[in-house]
Amino acid sequence: MAEQTEKLDLFSYIDKACADLESKRESYNKSAAKISAYLEKELEEFDALVGVTHRIKSESSLREKIIRNNLYKQYSAQEVVGACSDIAGIRLECRFLQDEAALYEKLKELFKIDAGDGYYCPEGKKHLRLRLGTPQPEYQKNGLEIYRIDGFVELGGEKYNYELQIKSLVNSFWSEIEHKIIYKNKRFMLIDDFVNELMGSLNDSLKNIDRQLNMLFRRCLDSSQKGQMAAAENMLLGLINELFSHLVESRIGISVNIKPYSQALVKYILGYSTFARIAGDSTGDSALPFNETVTHFMRWLKDVDFDKIKVGSRIVFDHPARYENAMQEIIGKKFISEMNDDFFCNTFFHILFSLEVGNDMQDFATYVRYYEHRIGAANKSEPGKVRLKYEIEKADVGKMVLENTIERFAAIL
Image 1 (spheres, rainbow, N blue to C red):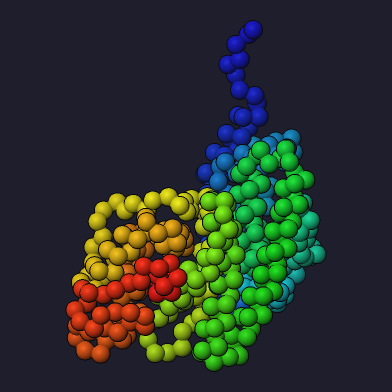
Image 2 (cartoon, rainbow, N blue to C red; image 1 turned 90 degrees about the horizontal axis):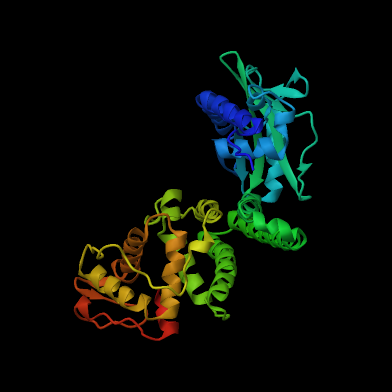
């Protein structure tokens, strides 16, 4: 058999195309940043907008696209990057499915000057174009609708294409799941019918969650602070309990009730977590921005890697915990002693660590501070004495008692 030492021409083609992309990457970044900044500024009064993000296609993604779509048969290696409409990707993320259409209509109001060939531009911004002459939303290969609009930015006399997508939190969450399951797992191509049916069922469930969240969210806007808190808790409780109940069951093979722990997580997320602190000052007396906290949390949740949540495995920290005072040390040591002996406590902290943004030790320290504040700072009657809702000795804080039973332990987490 003769030795094969030369690559196919296709691979030389791809190498040249990738080199062309790298030479233009900075310019694509600048053009994407320019259109993103414009949209963020003009849409800042659009209440349902969660955020504007952009990305530039990676080399590996370009390689896949060239082969998957047979682009090497249609364009030269020097032409292919300019021919791709999605080298830059812009995403407008909004709260709910019904907000996608409203956001699209807002874009049509901004890009109202006909620039020809189906493209439109804002008044006085001829260098920013969107192809609004095509019907939206369009249908994807999976049969689902998506708002996906081509555009380009003129920068230094050159055109830099981008693809703009409008996605609700649920659709964004769905896209991440689909990408990880379908595109990152080629083995599933052997059982396409089963996977498609499963993904379709999941999409229907997410749409139902969207309707419920939307209804509760609107109710939040018209209720008191207490009503807002209750509605926000209901939103997150249903979502967290549903997701993690299935996760725990898949890990241990047994259906367990984690609702008390889901409730404890919700109280923490809304009252003290990173997401609450991003939304606003959660320790002040003013009304808490519950809606913003929920929005920040849901954006983070869609990127959580559930495969890395090792429920049932021991939790080991890289270094000993550091505490700010004696109260925190007592609380922290109690949690550490329980988290690898009590299944529900272990599950609670595995889920907590997956939901927060820091490393495990940082998240643990934050939770200990939260717990101290919840049972201590807000209820001190005099120095050295603390009253717990459940049980505590009215003496030195070192004699604090935490319940050993699962139910009581869950209740005060």
